[in-house]
Length: 284
Image (cartoon, rainbow, N blue to C red; front, side, top):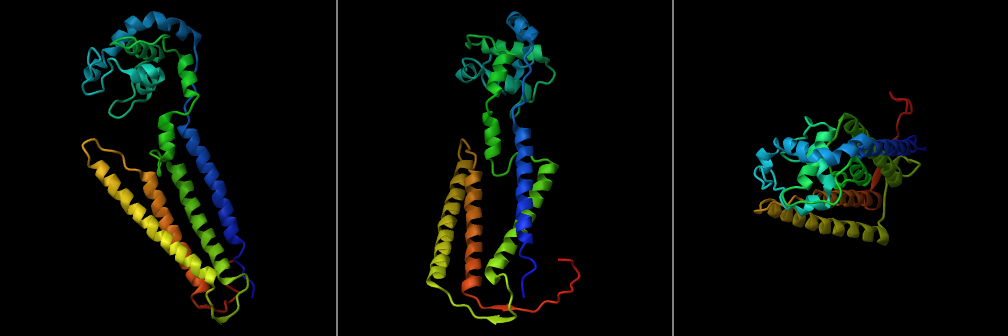
């Protein structure tokens, strides 16, 4: 008798692919740099206002960064080559915050540029041209390193309900589809009732030996990575663990084990097909 469930796994995989594309679209949209509006009036006034307004606005920052930018609770700003080489970074930190420093939402747009230029022209720092919305817009037209770091994480930092909902359905549909495809591959499109004897081929033997060997290799790599990450985390200057490598090795172990079990069932284990009643409780 022919199988009646040979098409549904492909339907599930196609639906999972569509949901995955939607998930990537939502995630990329949320992590993309926000466009910056360029106001000519703001550009014209920045050079005139930052020496006075910037110094006044920096008064709220002095408690963490020091009155002379020498640092304290916050990092030192004096003679800081990093911010001079990337002035847009100062704007992003002021408006978005980072670590213990919150976003300075109490500052309006002119004050943000005033205090940013004050920092970039004081304490031994100096940039040729004042930081303007045009400079920020040009810098943010490229992908921010923080965005790239978040996208490269095995699990992104910010996951909202739509992403969780879609990711769950992707995993469920993909699991169902792969199990269905494996069932068709292992048992065939036609089911013949009775016990079926199987005989392993040399190619199947090579396949199962290879998958098991690779499982051992990736297990060793996973353990080594975990030991390295634990050592880095416990060092005087902690190093963030390589979550991507850990996840890759763990995924390869599971996939290779699944492939070994699949090869064993198809080529090494006798199977039995039972007659099913065509009139079931479910329409499929």
